[in-house]
Each structure stands twice: as structure tokens, then as C-alpha cells.
Image (cartoon, rainbow, N blue to C red; front, side, top):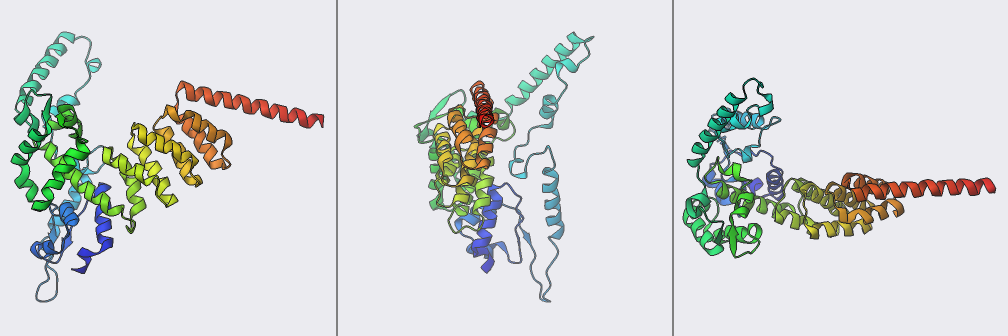
Length: 378
């Protein structure tokens, strides 16, 4: 039982969650016994997972009754994670196979030219059929705010709690429900008084995702809450997996992740600053404040941080960073940073960036010619 409360276990579970790694809880105790030992963050992340129980018998051996179930669960996850498939965490969205078949059907140019009329008629029948089927799909917004482009936050909150509070209470204690609601208001809605449908659809992953799961918004909110808790755990200064977690954060694109990575750019530890710069590039953010902070890191005292900032700004195609990258390419004392700055300019690949590269190379050639000429004279 001591292991369940260990810092190392908490760090590894949190890291696995934000890295979208599968988690298979295995225990020799019954869940009721474990539940009392789980803190809020661990309970939020692992409570709803499929546990495998291996109780010890009177003869001191462990029961293997749940072993086939564990093997089946692992095999299922491995199959889901083959190239071209979605991860188990997002697999709650089950789009009807008929719709998938339509979405992957041959494009018009792949159909023989001898039958254009047949194809057009067939395509229209498919579209009508799909529209009819989608009428039967519903989601939280359609059920409660159909036809409305935006809803006052208070109305949205009350409606959401009325529908989902009991389900939330199966995952978090009563005193944490307000924390979940505040995540919606602060992180998703960004303290706005009105909830726009466009924000709702974007958070749910797009309109297509709403077609397969009527509770998509709720599932996304609870996944986000788990991720928030996991982030808080792994970013503590005494976390054993801090740097790995920061790097893995790059796969997430939410405002809170971008904000968190911005804060880590000023961390006292140079390694943390460098990894945060790379992770920020991975998010693909266009946040101007984030880009300005990355540009500021081009003057960091540590050369690895400067190098990471050059590459991230290039990956983000920041045109505002071009003059700063040119300055690093021309003037940084470390060759690795100069090379990274040039690579960043090439990744930006705008007319301005290409012209800056061309001009600098011409100047280099002219300076080299002048040097050779002066040497020949002497």
C-alpha cells in the first residue's frame, strides 16, 4: 500500500497520462481498500480505468483469474495504436462505419468518365442519405441550445451541471465539482461571459467529432481536467519526470498548455528552458505573446536555449522573428546557434526570409573576396 502514495508512482502515472500512454492498473488489493489511499489527482486519472485484480490466496499464491482480461486489454490497446489508428483515449468517438465508408470512397476523378451522370446521381443519393442519418445524431449543444450561435455562460453552466453533475461526482468529490466548472470558464471560455458555439465545436475537436459521441463535450472536459491535474504534478520542482513531461506537452494545443510552456521559458534551469522552447514549437501556436517570449530567448545566456528558440521560431514560421534570426546567424559566437538560426530562416521560408538568406550570403561572398584581395596585396 505504500507504493500507491509514492511520489515516483504519481509522477509516472501523470507523465503517462499527458503523454497519451496506455495505463494498466494492477493490484493485489480490492478497489475499496485502494480508493482510501488514492489522493484526488490519482483518483481522477486512474479511477475509471480497467483494473486487474490479483488477490492473494491462503496458500500465498496469486489468483490468475484476471490475467486473460489484462492480456486482452493490452492487445486491444496495441491494435489501436498501430499506424493510422487513433489512440485509445480518443477512441470513445465512434463514427458510424457507413459514414467512414463514404468519407473514404473514391474521389470523382477516380470514377470512369463514361458514367458521369450515374456518378452524380449516386453522389447526391449518398449526400441525402448522410444528411438523414446525421439528423439522428445529437450532442449537448443541439439538445439544449439548438439554432443558437451563442449562450450566456451562466445558462450554459447551469444546463451542463443539470445534465452531468451526477456523472462528474462519480469521478471527483463534491468539493471539486466547482474546480471542473472553473476549468471550463477559465481555460476553455477564457473568462468570457458568453459561450459561442464556435468555441464549443473547436474544443470538441471539430463538427465531425460531434457526430459520433453525444457526450463529446463532457468527455473532453473530463480528459482536460485529468490532463490539468497531471500537468500540475509533473511540473513540480521535485518531479522525477519534469523534462520528459515538458517535451511531451508539445502535442497539446490548448491555451493553458501554451501558457504553461511560456512560464517555463523563464525557469531557472537552462535544460527546462530549452525543452520548453522546443515543446512550444511543437504546439504550432500563433499566440503573439508566446512568439515574443521565444524571440526573447534568442538572447538567453545558455546556447542550448538560443538554439532551441531558433528552431522553434522556424517551425512556427514566425515572420516577426526573421530579423532576430538573421542577427543570430550573423553574430552569435556559437556555431551551433548560427546553424540553428539559418535552419530556422529556411523553415520560415517566406519571401522576406529567403531574401535575408540571399543578401547575407552575397555579403559573405563579398567579404571573403575582400579578405583574399587584401591577403594577396600583402
